[in-house]
Length: 476
Image 1 (cartoon, rainbow, N blue to C red):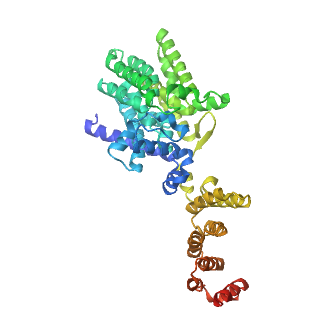
Image 2: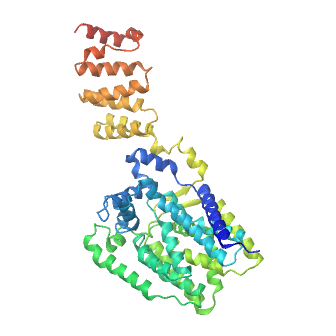
Image 3: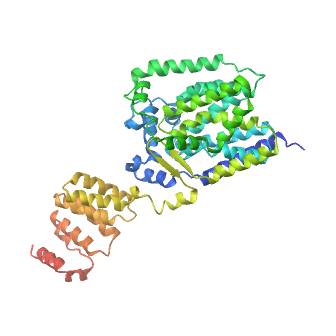
């Protein structure tokens, strides 16, 4: 008995939500880093949020030069910044668009494989296999990356049953990521293989891509900041300057279990078509590695080939076994963000929740407080105060860094600022006699002897230094 269309759609969305949640739990975003940046904007240098800082600049002022040279390549990736600017969206809702894109990609994959008569179980295993890959990890784990929508656009070009999604993708996707233009020809080739009786209508999509290239290469460079031009992008860094082992790891992490699909796609074809697909895949792989610092992200351009291979796999017992093995490997094998100069592990949800209580060393208040003390010893008071500012914001209890900043400011004769710091110390550590004593000293320096006499508690008068101070007050 066949499922009714409405129930079929409902089950597809429920399965998509389940697969999305499963991958999100196994490969969790850095929620603690997101929360920390929202609370302490100075922590915007963290890799998980650094691009998000630049993208919010675009949202506020689309087209303006970006201040972070690392992310000037996104100068004209304006589709989502314009959406955020025009609606306007709060930052949390804006960045959640990337997560929404991930859900839509998984839902599209499920629809695609259900139309190909895959069972529900095989569809789920396939969605997990293709979902547990770099496009998902980056879109959910690093703010300001919209790789999920790039993946959706490429899948639409390769497999959409009608023409309008193809044209829409060619109109909009280049403004998400210019690499869509590089990857689109291979996606069109996948379309010709998957739908051999429906030759792709290339005139409108090709015209849209040509118009984009004219604007991007001929018009926008006249308004571009340094590094946002094509020459500036390629001239900034040698992206292949990395150990071969790291390049290989980046290739693997790009698709992970999805590489089985790439192999199946090549093996499913015969003669010149097999050669053409193999050579095109290798060429796009090489171009991706040579033009991106993020090795694993660049493999997203091959996602249509991976999906094509699984679609073309014959119905056989070995396919069922293969899909289960691929999904299991995708969920169980460790995952990483791989760049040409670094490898960052991706953790499961429990680890990221624990990071709220145990943040990494770079997010510890003690780190910045100790660095500030060292800077004070070296006479670098500007750096010391900057680190103490950050330590106070990061600290669950700001008493200790507030004390150090108060001492620094008092040594510079800035008694008003010092009084505020010592008051913070007294508020958060009321049993510390130094807190009240230092606050009283600052009040006296500001000409407030009456306030300075309110030392608490009274028994502290037995301390020699306090007794001397009180005697000095009484003599005034």
